[in-house]
Length: 92
Image (cartoon, rainbow, N blue to C red; front, side, top):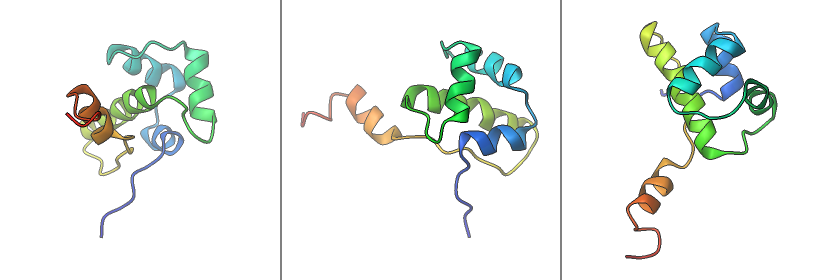
């Protein structure tokens, strides 16, 4: 049986990272929000920006991989994003 992916808040809690440590990793991966904005994203029920959600998820998932943990934070709408980038979303 496969476990459901974690949300950002649960991922942060299980990672043991502070908000500042996650923010640093997020910036390294190309995130551009302030620490305060990152906190707001994590404290809200749903992160409103898919790109930021996915960068934060990647940062947390890298921590779990580094620590050989089975946890995984879910990504959002990657298929749709990929097809839009390839110009397939408009039917081409």
